[in-house]
Every structure is written in C-alpha cells, then in structure tokens.
Length: 534
Image (cartoon, rainbow, N blue to C red; front, side, top):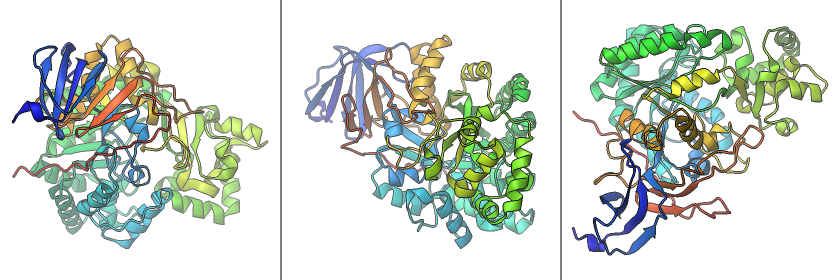
C-alpha cells in the first residue's frame, strides 16, 4: 500500500510505545483505524492528507481502564468525558459480577432496570449480542470490552433470593448460559462474591463455570468474597477456581479493607506470587486512592446484607419501628462516622451535603449518624453511595509497586455536570494519579505507561491494542508528562485532569486542549468482542 495516500501522520512526538522501553523521538502513520508504521525521527518522509505536529509531547497507547462500571452510563453519556479527558480509550466493563446481560427472566429485567434507573434506558435486549448492538448504536467515544457478570447470570437461573439449590441441572443451565455469552464475544466471567446472589454460590457451581472459561480461554475476574477478615482465604479460593479454568485470574481492586486487616498484605502477595510460579496468570487492578466507594447500605448489619438496595428502601419506608431500632444500633456501633462520606445521592435534601462525612451531615442537621444514614437510605437507597476510609497508604504503595497491577477506576463514565450523579474523584483522576504515584515510587515514565496500556491489553486478550506498533489499532493519547495530574477531590470530583492534549480512538483524533465546552465532536469507540479460537 502506498504510504503517500494515508490518512494521518503524527510527527515530532516522544513515543512511549507501551513496551516500557526508553522513549524515542519519532512519528506514527495511521491508516484508517490502524497504525500503518512507526519510525524514529527522520527515518521516513511521508506526504499524507493530514499532519499533526506533536510538539515533542509524549505519544502513548490509549490508556485502558481495567475495571469500569460504565455498562449503562455510556447510553446516557456516550461522550464518556470522565474517561476521554484523562486519556482512557478502552474500558473493561461487566465487573464485580454485575453485567446488563444476559436477561432471560422478567425478574432480572426489572432488577436491572431498578439498578440503572437514573440512565433512563429501557433494557430490551436478552444477551450479549443484543446489548452490544444497542450500545454501538449510541456511538460511544471509547471502546468497551464487556465481561459477563456472574450475579446477573445466576439470577436468571436461581433468582435473587439467595437460595442454595446446588442442583446439577442448575449448574448445567448456568454453564450453558455462560457458554452462549462467551460464544457471542463476552470477554470473560466476573464475580462479585460479596453481593447477592453470588454470595450464596458454592464451589461446585463456580468450578463448573470455570470449566466453561477453560473451553474459551477467557479470564476470571473477581471481586473477592472478602477484602478484610477472610481476605487470604478469599484469595486462595479465587486461585483454586482459576486453576480449574483458564488459569487466567484478575483480582479486582486489590486492597486490604479495614485497619485491623492491613497486616494481611504480605500473605496475600505470597499467595498470588506462588500461584504465578504454579503457572496461573495472576494479575490485579487498583485505583490509586485509599477511600473505597460502594452503596451506603453497606453499613447495615445482619439481614440487610442479603437484600437489594431497592428492597432495603421499601422495608425501611414501611417500618418506622425498625428504623428507630437500627438507628440505635448504628449509633452504638464502633464505626467512625467521620470516615464515611456521602459520595452521592439523588435525594434533593441531601445533595448539598455530597462529599461531606456522615458525622458532619448529622451535626449540621442536629441529628445522629445512625438516623442520618437511615433517612438517606429510606429516601434513596438505590442511588445513595458512600465512600469509606478503610485502606492504608503504605499498602497502596506496596500494591502499586507490583508489576502485575494495572489501573482501574472502579467507576462509571459520566459528564462533567451532576446530571448522572456525582462520583468518587477516581472517576476523573485515576490515570493521572496512577502515573504520578508510580513515578514517585521510582518507576520510569515509560514503565508507568506500560502498566496503563500493554499490561491490561495483555490481561484481557486485546492483542491489537495497548502498544504503538505496526498493525495495532490506532488508540493513542498525547500528553505532557510534566503536567499530567488530577485535581479531583470529594468536594469537586468532576474536575478535568491536567496534561492530556489529545486522544485518538480507532484512528479518529480528538483535540482536547482548549476544549472549554468539554464535549466531543467525534465518537469512534467500538464494542469489542473476543473471537473464539476453537
């Protein structure tokens, strides 16, 4: 093919190609949605229809978010500004056991509709193919590789009531359903064994599903059954399951949750690294923050652990005496309410308190923390998100230093305004912060880039992404490494990252510098499907 007729030449760039090798001055020629060739400065002379002077900035593969929950938010916000404006071009979705497919029962359809109600999208599809087709119609700005969520999968067979059938015919039905999703191109299986109905799953069920992953050679990604007291046991369970399957294991948001359990990290590393020696491809993702974020209802005890947020809202609204009892129990608990923040809610009364601690809110309202939490959950449990200060800074640094840990935001792509609710600052700042923390820990800029690009591409079998080399998809980011940083915090979480100048998604370039409107003119993302090798 004649290079004189190609589409786009990026020159005068400092190329970090994802290999972790030393950056070099050079140029990249893009034809259509692929990289046609790369060269060092002055090695080639091209005449093409468009040339872009990169001004000696870093040109790297587009960042890959290894842990996203943007499955439905991309329908409402296809521009995906929280991803694009920090250099992310590909998202791995369907994490923690929750995916918007398959949907073969009305119970599951109604449940998912409630979970995703703020996106105002009617769930009309039944499987991965149907979901992918509907999402592609919206022309998302980023690429998406969805995993199949075990909780959604299981609910289609067993419902959400947490029963433990353990029947062989249920296992057969689960495996058949997963087989169908993987054959349609889903990237693997994710579990959220802390949540219903996955928390009721026993070894036989999970091992049967691992056999399906082995058949397709797809990854097992898991939100562990415990991230605190039983963390080591949960890691060992995940490793044992991976050995029954594809021997590819991704630990989601690797952490030691709760001060009492911070000491467990060396033992966790020993488990993971022994598994690697045993031939298991063990990797992990982590967001570079010490506050986690999940449903505020996590603070509730006992029976509430087995209930959905919608069911919690209904029960609390209907039972005033129970609310009074629970408020007393929460107020007498040892929980430090200054370390629990109200990250988000759609309840108008509480919107002005987002980013504040429960203790601050209670004091402002002349109430108690327990009563404040229950008032929020009674009004808005499905949308009430909490942020919890339960992680160690020292452990975060130790985790990030492991060469098998990549970056994941654990968030949903959102616009800069609050129209889809507010998020954890990791949504707009994970990748700049990950880059800066790695560099502060002694890693080179090139190594930091590789951990955000080539590593997650390898983990999730995206063989033509994550690198700058001939034949790869043209997903690229142009940035100033000296200015790359995040200004997002819990009070102003939707703050644009600094230092990102442009992104290219499947060959289509978007200049982000000086984009005051924070909107995109072009959206060229693709819903990715893994091919079956047998």
